Length: 523
Image 1 (cartoon, helix red, strand yellow):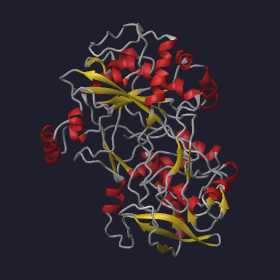
Image 2 (cartoon, one colour):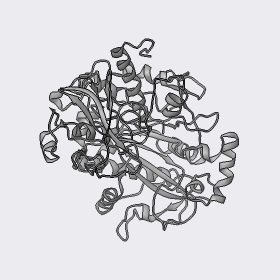
Image 3 (cartoon, helix red, strand yellow):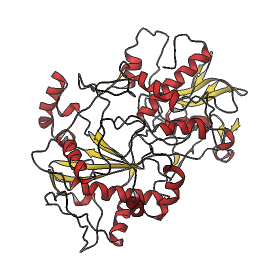
Image 4 (cartoon, helix red, strand yellow):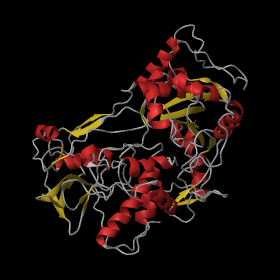
């Protein structure tokens, strides 16, 4: 899912959190450098010659969604570029990280690593799990790691790798803070409980994630959906796989997310969200018009896991809170055991402001989706359990209503049913991963943010704007595009793959400058 942050998100990094060189003025050129935006037209904020390919596709789910939105939600309108860093409250087609010429996913490992075999000084040691950073006093000099093939918690033979210049910790939003704590960098209470000698005090206790929900709707039989790929037999999938292998086209060249909107509430919407959100709106959103409160879009399939869901065609409303107030934590619990259980509390919906935003998004999505021509009702087990006799009751056999139909009327009991539904089913936006295979290269995309934040130390920061870990020498908590966003000092209103690209490009420039490597430029 190709989604870029708001320009003000990066400006906050620079001006609110005190990180010179990390504002949109510096990061947007790096993001243009990283991509080739394949759609034709005038897209001045997008790149034309970078390694990562970005393209459009469009299922009939997306086209019907946009057609309904253009008539039902005239206030917000339409844009040809929903990801230009500045636009909010406009519906549009959604791009994806897929090369439009061959239908293959365009990702970091293939374009930054595998195609650069001439770099003979790059050695990747696969299947090693990092235990901790080795220190000589306060200077980082290497890492300890164990074989990851059998994933045992028992004592294993340790291997050590020593650095001639620099140690780079880049192990994800869960892995990086865990490695630092096992290395003696962390809060005294956590380290004492784990019998680890403290090298430097950093009291960091925050994780941030986007809160995601999918609500499924039945689709007409003539709708193009990806359900056959997700739930079909090998024989049913084979024709699509064959076509994709031949020409890179068809359903297997899709990612199911082809249209959406970055939503900001109007006055009526704010009233709907409720009083718990008002302070957050005033302090964070009102004067930042490029910051969306919610992302809402289409998913051309059933996205749930209920085995009783009938085998048929679906389309789903996908929505997630862009800047939830609720936060969580992640800490080690098993001393130096790199396989030990983490103390992870996501904190989802701990703040009531987030509950109201999700309630608003559910209602907004339902009004749009029940007006689409392909709509044939709701899969009830994927929706709130409304009380008997409710005007908001779902139906598993229905047809679309007219554009001009009145919106569904929800009672206080209905709102409570929606809130309970979200408390039960809301989850991660699937951007976070907790597997640590290497201290340097983990070829995945994550979005848990802020676990090793780039802020002033007095404000809870772990690294400075040059990505140096406070209190020690020659150790960078460097998070690149192959990894996570654990250094982000505040959240971004986006799927964070694009933000990870920006961090990786920026970190490459910083490291090249410090090591005296020539030819690496800002953009």
